Length: 267
Ligand SMILES: [Mn+2]
Image 1: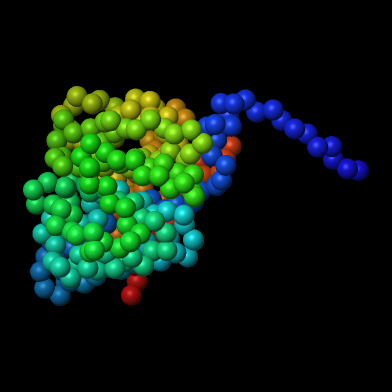
Image 2: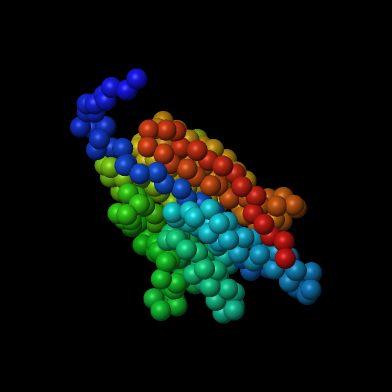
């Protein structure tokens, strides 16, 4: 029996607010490349190599999954004192990703007077890297993906700095995604640096807020906004065995799904 064709009259609002296509992206943060906490000598080098392999593993995972986007939410580097070879390594890895990569600085690689990123010429950056260095924030559009992404550069990790302050309005018909590096806290006045509050998350009305700074996975969704810490992909920071990324799947009309995926860091 033929199924009768039914036309559902959607309201104008529904049509305007729902993106027309699905979106898959990987959310990572806090790789902390080139940490000196592992010490000097062979042992320190071996640990730093594991972290490098984990970052390389993130790129491979994004390519294997044919992700639409890769988000790097701060602290890619452990400090602003990064040797040229390490900077080259990171940029080469990002360049290996077959999708746009959107990145913000965090408190360890802050965009201050010692900023690693200030010294980079456009020619030094892979063509697929969208590095947000504006302290007041910037919106990036990917029309082919029906995505609008907002983020801002951390300059000073202090109680006055608001990672979600001055967010752009969510755009109708787009997946609205934000990147923010800071500490989720119920109380904005407790003196902690770079606070991100539940009220800010809820008021954003964004689809997804990709958080960085906390090294373990944590879901802090509020209202209609999904918000999560992905945790570090590097073994050693969060656990001795492994690190993870968040693989996020956005399908029109469905709740946003977050899958926590182990990152390969083995040689
Ligand atoms: Mn941090």
